[in-house]
Image 1: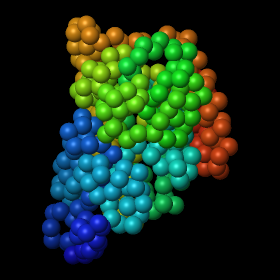
Image 2 (image 1 turned 45 degrees about the vertical axis):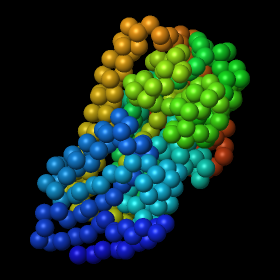
Image 3 (image 1 turned 90 degrees about the vertical axis):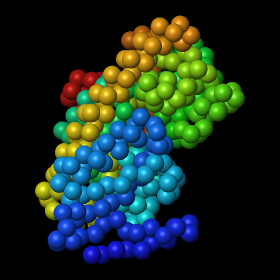
Amino acid sequence: MKQLLKTLTGATILASAFVTGASAQEYTFTFQSSDPSGNPNFILQQGWAESVSEATDGQVEIELLPVGSIVEHQETQDAIAAGILDGHITDTSYFAGKDPAFGLIANPVGAWANPQQMFDFMENGGGKELMNELVEPYGLHFIGATTPGQEAFVSAVPLDGVDDLQGVKLRAPEGLVQQVFAAAGAAPVNLPGSEVYTSLDKGVIEAADYSVFSTNQAQGLHDIAPHPVYPGFHSLPLVEISMNKELWDSLPEDLQATLEQTVKDFAQHQVSVLAEADAEAVAEAEAGGEITIHNWSDEERARFRQIAMGEWEKVAAESENAQKVYDVLTTYLEEEGLI
């Protein structure tokens, strides 16, 4: 049995990958999520970790930790490469500061009308290959993609179209999402998800790109921001499940294939569960009468998408990888009749 001892901020962490010929459990990995404990996404991700054990008859065990357990959300990529973590489940846009290509593939704002379009792009449109071209130089291997779905939009002020975004202080992740909102006339700021509620409550921001409707409602955001936009008009984030490349390469091919299948199954399950939860949350909000749901017209959604596409081109010019993502993405969208 092989064990690697690492020390981080005074804590001793045992390496999570080991092999035994006699034991049914051959590999144990530690992953960190970009979601907090108790968040619906994190609870579903824990279910995926359990499904890996079941699908591999206990040969692969994954311990999933909530955001910030070992490192900060934007540091997991480096931690995986260094062997501090074995893998992560995270929004790829958190690494846009390293290469704008991460931001473009993670959330080409306005590109996807539903999760199945994004999943097809990843599986059949070159997305999976692009992701590995992006992450492998950093010591990672991309296993597969999931998403919470088409995000709603949290707002304390009425928003019925692009013109209403003018000057609105809103939280958005760094990279392309911020660029698009700025181009649309808003005033985006970079805040972690953990600060969205207090920032809205104190008036630091007026709106937030955060999560799907049901998650926003469960966390009480609509109590202080009673003008959500649903269905969302902007964001369908790519949430990657990736791990240390050397550890991935050490896995037998049958276990690699099983892990990939568990991610595909999990992605469909997550989308289905959260879509059902959204429908229930919307009905509850409408019945309560204290929340006004704003649904943008097709014309306003098209206006926002045109703004977003202009920003895609700008991001593409920022790096060779970003240009490659832009070319593959727009080729797919054109071939599928989506633009």
